[in-house]
Length: 186
Image (cartoon, rainbow, N blue to C red; front, side, top):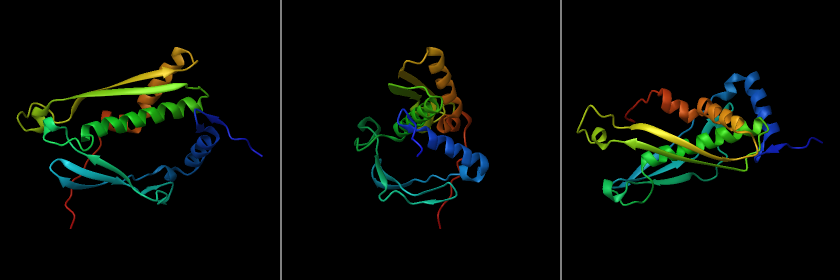
């Protein structure tokens, strides 16, 4: 009987097994994630996330969709019925860098007692409002700060942070861009 090895709550044996499967069958690495959104009123909309494609097949393991209300604060004409899209982007990035950090720490056998991330970013509304073509409508910069409690040496924590910066899929997407194609459904 094989004993399960967990580090930081991550099943390391399973992680290594997944890596071996993907090395042997690279097509298993191709995923398609999806989100749906429906406008409700004003700046309020509701997003749903449920099925996705991964590991060579459609995944329908989620019995119910994850539902997120999206809105703006009152100063931006909203009613605070949810985080705004910029805050959701920061939230998604925080989840990705946290997951990446913990996955690599676990694979390397580094026990983490506590991990928190705090993110903030700067947006100049003149770009979004069309007041200035000199100002981009998106984030000018995003800062990620890690708070780590571990017995590991500082050098190991810095190595994990650098690995996270290089391997986080959302960090890569934001730093290097990705084509976004718009289309009108028939």
